[in-house]
Image 1 (cartoon, helix red, strand yellow):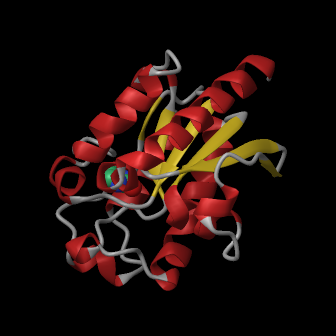
Image 2 (cartoon, protein in one colour):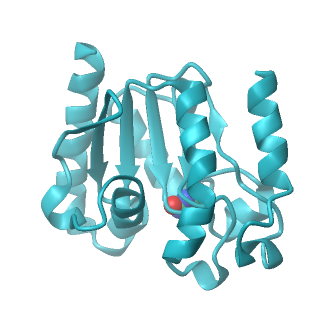
Image 3 (cartoon, protein in one colour):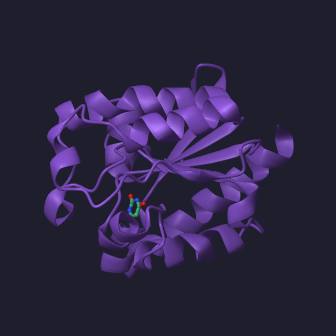
Length: 183
Ligand code: URA
């Protein structure tokens, strides 16, 4: 816990990339530090930047519904993002921004030690797992990294833009539920 708070404090003072100049505050992540499931998104949006908490805007509300579909609540899981500061205009984080920030994510993963990681959207898939994979082709597929099971699904913001993706995302959530039960 002390290590975790130290990491949160380090992130709060981070100046490793230019996103520190435009953020209101950092959004380190939050949730159950003993979670078996970790969710990784892209980066904070406007609401998250304002309140310092991940996935609390519209995409976050849809994420809550996706979790509800598999009987999970926020307090059961740990949620964070590839970058801990809001990219201006909610643009996709640049490679160098993600690179500067990834060390924090690796520390969070080590501390929480989840069995399963769910990557929300292409940025999380590409920056955490493999730059060459496409979310449309690789969603719903289980991978293994550092002894943990890993899957990507559509980002809830993508589901808000295109509701036809919701069926696939629901199938993916059920797959997460089965994997959690088997681990
Ligand atoms: N989208 C993300 O990827 N992360 C958040 O925290 C909020 C919206």
